[in-house]
Length: 326
Image (cartoon, rainbow, N blue to C red; front, side, top):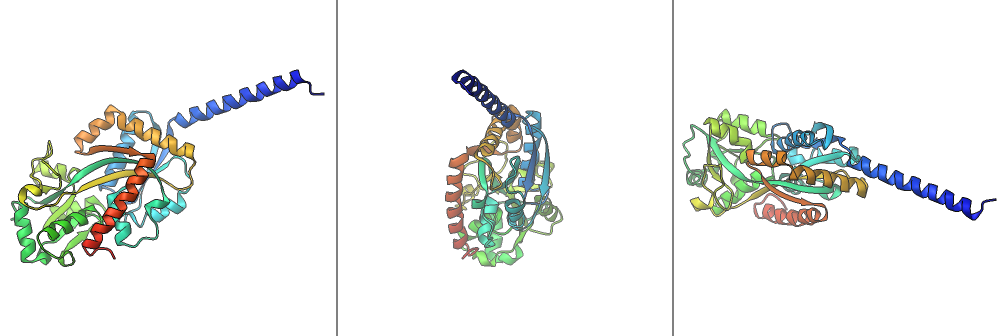
């Protein structure tokens, strides 16, 4: 017969075991993990650079034991996004690196897969865009570039990321400010930053638009020149005027963020957020951010989800104004 003493003793044992199990689960949640990183773009671009920089810092800070990076490029991330949503569903130690470019591409390409189907983790970095030309270009200022657009936009091909992304949006806004129809522009989209850079260095295009960090080495080497940046004011470490300084009333800010696949638990989501917050607070990450001319704009969890919804609505409005969405 089970008496009161036996019951209390058994309950205490079960309770102790439960507490121990909870403690072990909590410890495991904080242990370094093997991270799977999905980059819906070709190697060499901003998302790929972000992923590889994250891997470097996460390893240095002992927040992961290792990482596997998978690149699936095309159409501003909309080729890879369905794969991440459907094939990576429920993976607790998986993340995708994306951002504003994907938001625009989803709208422009009428993608059935959207970021609302992922699990938002964190907005991580932001950067202003740079308008660059080959060193031998006849364009000395952004005003020269705009004058050429007005004369014949078809003769001013510009390389950038996928259609509908931040690079394309900036090109459209610059043209709009000059009274040039967006539909007349010659925009050459590339799946990865490496391809766009090769087109620039090979003089296959007249100019290029991307985050300054993607052009920084070539600018320092003298093979590319920066005509303008899309910031509200000049930036430390970047020897270039803003578009506004050159009477082009345009300002644009590109952001990059982290997403988890759908179907993960709240505990898994919290663990990923905690990992990103620890990484972002580390000296190793802060050094990388400075070296790459990124701006830290960390926003996590529910607040990040709210930002995504608001930013999507804003970008949709811009693309409609530019004739890039219906």
